[in-house]
Image (cartoon, rainbow, N blue to C red):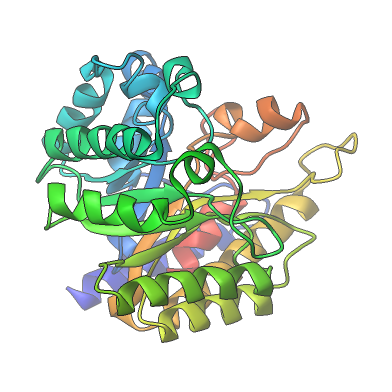
Length: 345
């Protein structure tokens, strides 16, 4: 098996070295080169109506994160109504194609339905609301979702807890309660906390580790940390990313690189995706993967890219700028970074 893998890798590597060829043959899935899952965030509408998108999702990745449809405004739009339709469709897709399904996300301060934003009640009423929300969803997908992102983006950049609606209504203990509720609903699912800038913001990272180590000491199960990794070719330094991987693993947390994309135009300049910029992007991805490979296997939950094609990247809409942060270009052709990923895995 190892000989076959080496031959496949050599074939891809030589293909990438051919003069004037910057694209890689993507006829073999990325996950076949990796000892840990390689995932992507899925837009359910693209999956259902774009056959090229669907084909790449099936062939290239073995872990799937729902980009939006598990978030509260989609899945729990009314107090007594849960909209399972699209979420169940994605679940069936994963089952039929042998893909791991990662639950993103149970508790977040954004993309909440209006009824939650308008909810009036005591702290115990809010706690019951949160418990019902978490446990109804987790129970519905029990033994289908492998891991849950229980809480997302609960910290400010200065390391303090974000004063979001959950903290305002329930208190700072809402995070602990959320993890307890999720574990009660599915004891077999892994439980993650997810946030951004953990690779570069030491203060924030230490606050996150402190809180979740404290919860563990109190008997609350927390299995891993999701590092979003919306990075760019200007910062952070690869050495910062390496240090973050090592420190989180040293604290006995699994690491999910949960939302990876690499911007080549963070300052919104008028650019074209030149080979120079795409090579810089590829080299950073290679550094990220190399350093992820350096942590012990038991802490490698996988690397998930936040989308398939530059055409579908959230960055273009959210920041209203041209950017090319993903593995495939607007025509769904593999980019230089795709080749580098195969080389580094």
